[in-house]
Amino acid sequence: MLRVVVTALLAFSIIALLLASALHVATFFSTHLGGIPRYFGFHFGVIALWILAVMIYRAKGETIRPNALPQWSRAPLYFLFGYFVFNMIFLFVVLHGGGAEVVNGSYQLLEHGKLIGYLTENEYYRDITIELRFFSSGWMIAYAATAAYLLHLREVVTPGFREVHLG
Image (cartoon, rainbow, N blue to C red):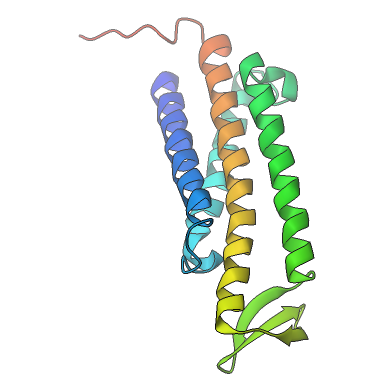
């Protein structure tokens, strides 16, 4: 039963990683992708996936730590983390620490409800796309790390997992 659960979670994390990556790439080519609320499913998926992965690890007597990652996955994950930090800095620089919102029909840049400035429609869509790019880079690292941990669980913690018996 554990094999089926781990395989399903691994498949979910890989599919979510591919979707988050596709969305991230799309942010470079379109500014009309919608805001973050449209993509909250990625947030919920990451949280649910991590809770389940941690529960499985603890049930097997393992702890989630960087040395539990497969060796081949560490460099790509460190790169994704660096890229995430870059996107965070870029977001803060471009948006001046605020967020683009529509208030009473006007496009505004707000910081905790305080008006920073007014935006044109194009600037508004550019800013929410930059925000979406930041979040999607975070989703990519979260789903990639979960997939790497689940691969570790599959290959090390449950020996013989690769065996497939039909019938």
